[in-house]
Structures are given as structure tokens and as C-alpha cells.
Image 1: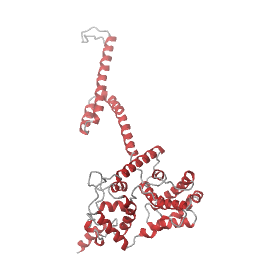
Image 2: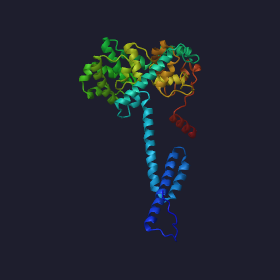
Image 3: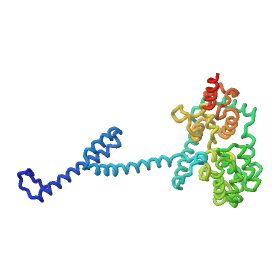
Length: 387
């Protein structure tokens, strides 16, 4: 760099030289301002909001460089936004595969690659939890769990539950083996988010119209299936799933249903709960506990499950399944679902459980602790005001 001195008023420098000096000064000042703006943008991730506001005030005091700083900040922050979005997608891709009740009201288009990654991650978690439950030193079982289970069995034998009336229909024992397995798959798929007697009636209508084989369902139109299964929960979506499942069973399994957990989970509308139940009933293959809302609720009320390393309740049926399999003997895995579902329909109900008539209330940490609904509180307050 050539330094030209004597730029004062008395110096005799040509106009071209003066212009050259002015250009050098501007380039030098702009280089400094850009370096400052880059360092300011880099420090945004480490500073608090108050520091960023102070930096903005400082930048406003220099109107000449404000536009350059804004451009540089925006250019520096754009890659961070893209990286953060990729991080969110990456976290979503390793989540467990959702059941139909979790996605019934969400119309999203999932790419085959992301669906496959979710399926693989769920299979890995399932294999890990299953292998952990088979170790000779399983998780520590809760105190008095055998007495609690025995008490629930006695209560269940003394009074019937809505699920008992349709349990025999769900197995399809009156059909040949191949047709029975497809019957089990369709009936279980329709049962999600639906009361048992409504599911039983819908399956019976399909059976009366000759639509309980993959060949017949594949030939039938979707509006007919939708009309026959109404009013099961999310009947429109389930009619679409039933059609797709029948097509897959015909094309890939010669009219039969998949016999592995991974293949069942790949079917439309089939989540962990449905897959495990179909394996139990259709193939007599026990790979995990079938956990629905009743089992999830009751296990948490009894204090049988918790998040790993904490005393917090599990937040989903899938978490409950993994926690329960750590200590419950495998010979109880099949019976526990039917036992707790009936118990949850009659005594340990979702709202205002009948703790006064429950014979195991002394062993239950949640007995008589359910708070009444807001409507009942309002009624009591109104009555007290009138008095």
C-alpha cells in the first residue's frame, strides 16, 4: 500500500490523488464495519435479548453502514435457521410411530423415507425393550402388585364389562384360520377410539354383507364400506385404511395378514397397540403388552409405571408398555390387557372412578384423589350461594 501524506489545506496534491485517498478511506472504514457486523452476528447466539437490543441501538447511530449490517446479519442467520429446521425434522424422524387415534385429526403428507425411518426406530425401541424384559434381573416390581392383580381378577369375575360381550366375536373363532386372521385385523383396526359394542356391530354388518375377506373388500367401493362401518370413530379414514389393507394382503401375503410386528406396523392405520393385539389374537405371538388408554391410565394410578429414572407418570401408552414390560412377568402380558380394560370400564373409570366400591383401594396410591369436574364444582358453589 502506498501512503500519501500531507493532505492538509496547504498541501499540493492533485485532485486524482485526493480522490484515491478518499476511496481508500471508505474501503478501510467499510471493511472495519463489515468485520464488526460479522462479529456482532456471530455473537447473537451467545448474547441475551438485551445485548442484541443494545447492538441494534449502536448500529442505528451509524446510518451509512446500517444497510450493510442488516444484510450481513440476515446472511449469517439464514444458515442457522435452516440448521434449526433440520434439527427439528431429525428429532421428529426418530419419534415412535403414532397410532391411528394420534393422527386421525391431522391430515399430513408423510414421505415414504420419513415413514420408513419412523418404522425402523420403533422396531429398534421395541426390540430393545423386549430384550431388556427377558433379562434375568428385570426392573424392580412395585410393592403388592400380585395382591392388586388378584383383587382386580376377583372384581372382574363378579361383574361383567362391555368388552366381555364382544371378546368372543373379536377372535372370529367361527371362521377358517386364514379368514379368521383377516377378521381379527379388520376388527382390531376398527376398534381404535371406538366403544366395543359399536365395533362389534360394524364388524357384524361387514360380515352380513360378505365384506370380511380381502377379495371382497378390494372389489367393494369405499362409500359402501364407510356406510357399513359407521358410526365407528373416524369411519371415513378407517374405510380408506381397510381398502388399502385388503389390497396389500392380496398383493403381498396371498390374502393372509402379516405375521411379524414390523410388517403389521407398515400397514395403513396400524400402530403399536393394534399390531401387538393382532399378534396376540391372530398368531398367538406375544412380543409385547397391548396397552390402550385403560391400561395406560390404570397402571399410572396404581403407580406401576413411571418415566425412566423419575417418579413422574408416563405420558403415552407406548411409554407405559415399555415401563410395564421391565418388571411384569411375560406370562401376564396377554391377560393384563383384557383384565385392565374391563376393570377400567366398570370401576376404575376415566372420570370419577368408583373407589368406594373398589376392593383394592387400600393398596392404590391414587384412591379417592381424583378431583371432581369443573361443572360439579360450579353446581356446588351455586347451591352454597343460594343457601
